[in-house]
Length: 69
Image (cartoon, rainbow, N blue to C red; front, side, top):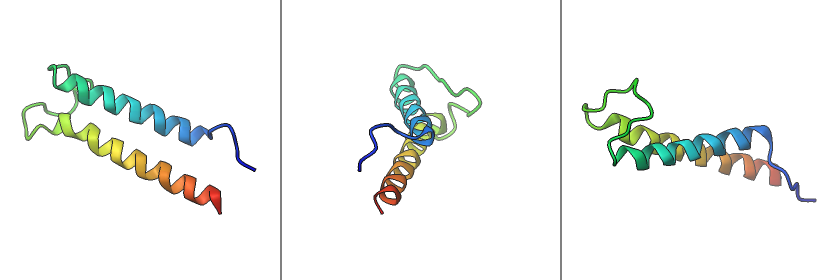
């Protein structure tokens, strides 16, 4: 039987991924949502959100695979 609702962990990861997408899009406008990372050094603050987004997607994939077993 398929569950209709997401677990708390999935909801947290999806919120984090949405924040990362917004941060990445706003970084192109010059708005930095994560000011603790330096904005000028190799564009770390711009691409850190993409890395977090990819990690979150991998976590969701692993959780979904483990729930199907």
